[in-house]
Amino acid sequence: MHGVRDVVADGAQVHDFQLKKAAAPAPWPDPPATVAEVKADQTPRLTSLSPGAGCACKLPLAKLEQMFAAMDPVGPASGDLLIGALEADDAAVLRLDEHRALVLTTDFFTPIVDDPEDWGRIAAANALSDVYAMGGRPLFAVNLAAWPADGLDIAVLGRVLSGGAQAAAAAGCFIAGGHTIDDPVPKYGLAVVGLADPDLLLRLDRAVPGNQLILTKAIGTGVIATAIKRGAPHAAVVRAAVDSMTLLNAGAAEAALAAGVRAATDVTGFGLLGHLHRMLAASGAAARIGATAVPLLPAAAGLAAAGYISGGTRANIERMRPVTRLDAAIPGELTVLLHDAQTSGGLLLAAPAGTTAALLGDLRSRGLPAALIGEVVAGQAGHIAVHHA
Image (cartoon, rainbow, N blue to C red; front, side, top):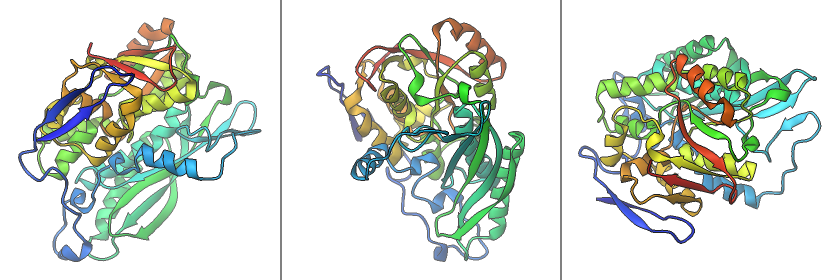
């Protein structure tokens, strides 16, 4: 049994939950196959070539915070640089003039699924999401790829790039070249330039008490991706996750801007609670959320209970302990999913209270499983109280 202890902050109750061991492979993935182990006439499962999957391969938030604390101080954005490194938002923003600002971001990761085109579409959608999370629209992008030069068919990379091009085309975004390197672990993503109105940016630091928290996509891609690496989930479960991860956040951003939302982020490798914490810390506020209000992907709860938990998710659980109060009634698998390292997740919106009903209606009319999951409150910056209901 794999025990994960959830510590409730501020001296409240401490409780344990147990996670069953996955029936098939070992609880931790085997080391990735090397290119030398792949015969020329075989195409290995892409997910077998990586120790992580999707955004779960990101460096943990705690390690990044430790690194930045040791670096020389970075000054705040100033002049035409509206958002830079110190602001730590989803993308950098440079004002061109009164009505236009460039949005710049990059994102790439290891295989999250075994189908090359699906991986390309997911990785591209994930990179494009940072532009949408700022309230912008993508203009053009360049490919970023790492690929084994020997032992893995280069035609497979062509299919990955084709998938990325499909996602970019759906976003109205040109792909104008790129860069590749020789690497035993495949990686793919985009560097993206977008355009936004500088007065209508969606920012991490604009959430205020009274805002209602809306999540636009279901969560659970992390446990599903971990199960894919171990060959566990049913095809229908994989397809539902792929459909969610390849769904662009363009419609969510449009609806948010139309509703007057000014605070948002997208939910990726740091999990729902991790990204909410970052928003709250930047805004100087706290939040309350209802665990059972959070939408879940099909089979995600069962896979979490079975122990398909990535190292990235485990790191998220540890990082969030000091700033999260968890209701003891929350099932262990749901607690895992609240920390689950997502890939190409939805937008987390902090919406003015009077706009919530209309915004939810707009989001759902666009086919999004949007849900009201909580509210921003006054309190210690970055702290989150998670109730069962």
